[in-house]
Image (cartoon, one colour):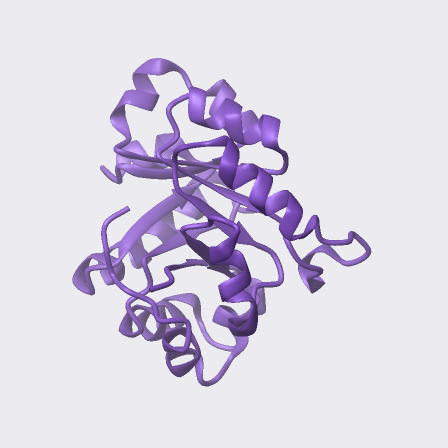
Length: 202
């Protein structure tokens, strides 16, 4: 069974983000990453304080993106970082987190993230996507090489559709991340269920 991590982008939502999160949680994704990294730390914390309880009440893993200090303040033990943020994270802070993810764009990135203690990584962008207009996807070859280079779970990101999931899984990925469709589709619960999502702690 495939596994889906939802990555947020409030700017794509037709409704307020907490209402969208409620709908997403009803489909039981593996996790929700609050990605709103354009916010200040205080603005981000305000969003996280609203959304974290929704995820907890629905048994969905909540992952903070880019703001380790906010995560520690809120006692959220799951963090996702760009690789540069992972490198900058000191060992004391790193030890606080039981779930540690990083965004990787090469085999070298993936190996580095694993060596620095990541419990999972995202790899992308795999397919062409409107979020990266003008930049071609790195492709399934790239994904397969990343998956075979590490022992930790790899989640494909970028242009993921239901009809591509079997290809992703054959490359060795544990699952995939979805952003745009999760933010804009009216039938988001049914859409996520088409992927065969399941709720399991990372």
